[in-house]
Length: 467
Image 1: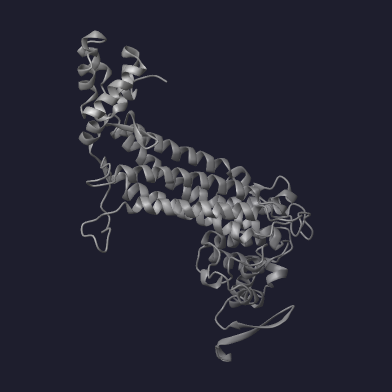
Image 2: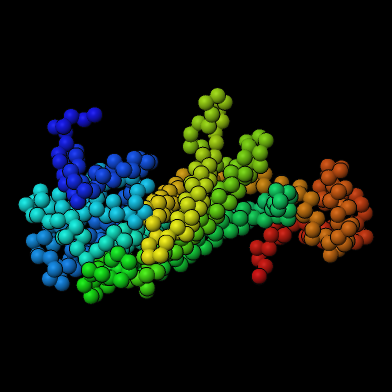
């Protein structure tokens, strides 16, 4: 146990509390630290930043309304700015698994700001001044939605855009690189590698559309509703003024005052919707990563259609082995995002009457999902997709050897006879072309030139066909 000299005594409405002597937090934060030693994980950086921005905006508006004197406003704004910029994250020790309203983290912010002001010779009270016109019930969800909006716009959308651009560049580069198609993991009619990568790119572009489509709801802020959405103890116009200040501080045009304050405090449907869009992106990334991993499997006993960049040794026992590590990273990130979404959905259903009481875990999961999706998407683009090298000759050989290329013969010899050709080719281990000739369909049903035209694997891909 620490010696008494390493602590100072702070007071709150419940009495005395011992607080580490160098800590900027005070009594209520310390109680939360002692009450919730659960995971060792605190708030996401984006949320701490948003809390700082919100406290600054609230102080400015309270000052403008004549409720807070200029000296206190300036001191609070300066302190909150330091929090927003990330200088003081170590002074936010409260575990994410805390009171469901986020009250402990709201008070953590209030207390740190008060201590910073005191260090500059300005006395402000954590509740009466820093938390003026506010409740944890409107500030914590407001900060959560500000943080979510900001990281989606500033981090996730650009990262997904980078990935989409990489995939689109490869789609164009490999537009005419023919390869076997596969359905049910079985041979199917030919496609091009470019077509597959164009499909991947569209998945990511659609993901951007989906996540941006949630922002009108995510950007609704409950500030001004105070404890239960009624606005008790907040001056008229406080919420809308704070939102305008936040728009100015962040540049986020999607922020707006909640359409209905009771919905905005009692439910977190906007976060649930956003998390669902993130889950869909995770599903898309899993599909893309797995397809690319399959294409790169080998080198001798897999598909070996493409070579993935060699990033690191793959085995501690098998010399020379190299694994598709970034595909695996992306798949694991996606699994975490899907799990996060399940928790967000459960937590979103956990509100009762005027307040959802699982906001910290919802905030943590949504913000973590955005962060890891953004980071992994950029890595996937720059360290995997951009460096993929196709084996075009092998893919063409595989496409030409696939029994499914018999499909264009249906209109010349019929489905049943075409099936007989495919089975004969497999049984005799010969090409489809050789089987057609061996079974006497040339010249009886079609000429050799017609046969070659129909069996042109690139022509089967429909590159020049209008849809």
